[in-house]
Amino acid sequence: MSFFEKLRKQKLLSGTLVLFTLSVGILIGTLITTGVRAAKDTPAAPDATPLVIPRATPVTNQFSELAKQLAPSVVSISTTIEEKAPQVSRGRRRPAPPDAEDEDEGGMQDFFNRFFGNPFGGDMPPLPRRGAALGSGVIIDKNGYILTNHHVVDKATRIRVKLADDPTEYEAKVIGSDVETDLAVIKINAPRPLPAAKIGNSDAVNVGDWAVAIGSPFGFQTTVTVGIISAKDRPGSTFQHFLQTDAAINPGNSGGPLININGEVIGINTAIATRTGAYEGIGFALPINTAAKVYNQIIKTGKVSRGSIGVEFAADDSRNADLVKAYGASNGVFVQRVTPDGPAEKAGLKQEDVIVAVDGKPVKDGQDLINRVSETPIGNTLTVTVLRNGKKQDFRLTVGDRTKIIRDRFSPQPEEGPESGQATPAKFGITIENLTPGARDNMGITEKGGVVVRKVEPDSFADDIGIQPNDIIMSINREPVNSVDDVKRIQNTLKPGAAVAFRILRSAGPSPRRGGRPGEWTSLFLAGTLPKTAQ
Image 1: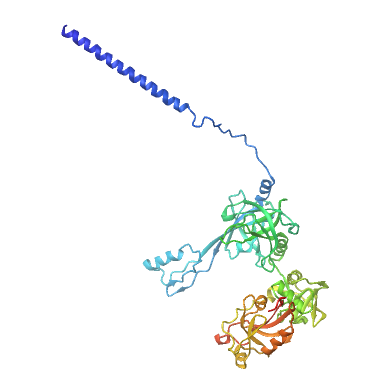
Image 2 (image 1 turned 90 degrees about the horizontal axis):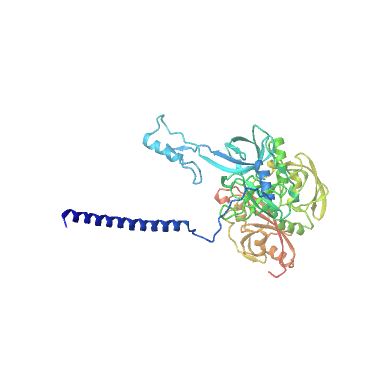
């Protein structure tokens, strides 16, 4: 075989091998590709049905309708509080209190003072502290009058209001404010009439009724929460008796409306009961009937005026009832103190009188008396009927201005007591001793008689009615007390279940030995019913 024939056969064999290799490669590639495509076409969950989004159809209910109806009447309120600049001492800025929100302005100022000095000479002018607050409000009048909480706008140097679905921030001014109900009226000037909320009647509210709260908790505008009225007439201050609700109320809800199922405002959200600072299921709203009275006075005069006759009585209804009973009346208010130069004193009312009626209508308790007197226009006259020494007497008096008549309550009692003598236990749960002449002079007590309380047993009768160490017992059931023996004698005449009334002196100022003025004592009356079991 020639050389050329060998070469030709060898080329043919090589070509055959290459062609075979390519064919095998194509076959393998095809199989792999087919397998991959088959894997891709196989569902991960072959027995699952794909989801199909239905056509958008609004689902309506009563709460969503209420939200649409009332949300335009609810506003978000933000305030700026700029306090006076702190004083400068020895060339340095006086440090702000720990709770001041001054945005570290003082620290930066100190930095410049230390490293660059003041180019103008002298102390660098201190910067004012600035803080901010958030709250809610409800539009009451189409002309831009808004009802909110006093604490939302208190001390604010700038108030801005945002309406629902409106990016504009409107500047607001305070028309008037009432601290005792924590309400305020503010006004904005909008370019159009505003949607005013519909006012309801909070007297018609029942426990278990639906309640809807709308506001800006934590700054989240137009937040809607739903619950029920869980209680009524929860006491706050003298003029605050709240509706309680479990609709979620959080910081920022203050001043917003609480609404009934008819879309009517029945309260102004004011406070929460919480251990954490946030919602725990108990919120409080001031009834709209109370808020409306405040609002009407503010838009008329810019302030709230309340009447007073100048008497003080026990804040605890049960103690007042015990005193009333002990002094022979079935209802009324026991007068603990008469304000000097007040309407009651000028008319002739005295300490230990029991007010049983006003203008011929019986007085139920202290709150009843406050409500009726405070709502009487200042300058009007009232006929007050009192029980004195078992006989009824009528007195005509002129109602005065509460803000001018009501004075500060008593200061804490001094830490130091009278000079020590021989302490004697008494059945009421107290340890008492006679007053020595030296102790009486040192304490500035000008009245004759009395024994000093050295100790009060916890959970005793005396503790229950409010007797405290260092009180001076002046009388028991109107019988003068001049010594420890008098207390023992009176105790022996009392039977289990009897009503007992004490007249005491309590320190109303610092101890004379600590720089106080002698004679800073006030007279109080405390009463209760002795237990039916022996003491």
